[in-house]
Image (cartoon, rainbow, N blue to C red):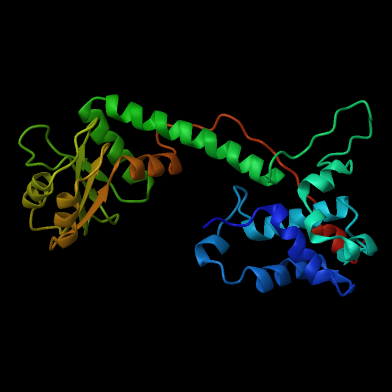
Amino acid sequence: MELLKFNETFLPILEVLKDGKTIKGRDLVRIVEERFYSDLPKELLDQKTKSGDRLIANRITWGKSYLKKGELVHYPQRGYVQITEKGKTAKPENVSLDNIQSNVITFYEPENKSVSKTKIEGDASPQDLIDSGFEKIEREVKDELLSRLKEVDPYAFEKIILILLKKMGYGDFVETAKAGDGGIDGIINEDQLGLEKIYIQAKRYSENKVRETDIRNFIGAMSGDTRKGIFVTTSSFDEKAEAKARNAHHTIILLDGLKLVDLIYKFNVGVQTKNYYEVKIIDNDFFDSEQI
């Protein structure tokens, strides 16, 4: 199941406004969501845009904006919205993004008529286009991260994992000897005083999956001063390995390649910010303020 597209909010918005009453824009968003989308799964309702806004509210707001461009609703006073006569008489089959845009309604109407107008392609809102662009870049960076992790020296890979855990807020870490460490690649302190220890095992595999014997050996190498361990790999775990970790008396966290690059990306290990893009939106609080 996917969340509604912004143009799919056109009819619900008009339905809420059909009695002709003037209501606050914020109330409109809330009522549309409650009346038409409250039965959606919580994980969909909680989705956010890249800028942190609730995605469903963002799309309803864009729907309202486009209906205004199509003259199906108007703003009779600051912060309020009302249906127009055109909106009241519009047939549902004619209330579409294509029809609105074909009426010379565009996302950006330049004052200089020689400048070409920009139409929104498909059923993506401008926010959707921004988010999808960022998501594409993020996927490409994560793919490259995983490739690089599979190529680095095994000892360097172990150090990267310890650096990541340090950035995640764990205490100091200790690298174990490279020979005779009994399957332990590092030890980190869960707290600053070192009262709780977590043992680390890092396997840099290109294709091979981590097997049950690897998990068993890891558990066997953990000393009596800890019952917590993290097993990290650039590949994945087979079913028996996952079952062994799940049923162990110790608490064993498994991080496969996909989860690993998500964390590395999030905590800025081996990546850097190249550009910042500033996207401005209307400040509704400013325009709704009684001070202006």
